[in-house]
Image (cartoon, rainbow, N blue to C red; front, side, top):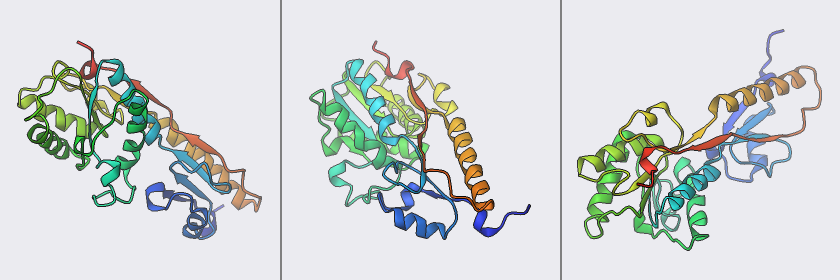
Length: 247
């Protein structure tokens, strides 16, 4: 049986919708079944898949602490106190979401991250290089890096660019500072040193989302009540590699 327009799933990325506005999401769906990619556990009528931005970033901060880091830098988003005036100031985008949980995690260890130690940048290799150059020019000029420095990059792409820029300026990783990325892209393992990362199980997420969408399409086609809303999370794991090793 051919699909009718009302049987098509509307997948709405969570950074396009204000948090908590379930009616807004339903309006965008125009009566179609909807699944939101993002943390929307408060929704009662809409399925969601959380991308674990906050949980993963918190998990990335902990091993740097365990490796002896006590001075932390974040590349990829402005400090929460400055987000209202920065590029991602509305809290949307991967950077601010991933940054949210890092200060909370470090605060439990008595560590704070001042605004000047959070450097916003694009999610590209060049963005990572630029952020690292700003770190070198702004912070490491007056206080050179030590083994107690931890650099949290909010994507592996940023981490790869930053690693190359730091190494070109004589900053050895992990001897002078430790570094970790986020996403688990294959290239993060091919750098020298290999970059530690938070790897997300995207294939498992894809299978879950597709299965849920098929169930909703089937219910709509049979004119049945939709299945109860379910809220899943992408599985993730911290993969420690040489870039965060305690040497």
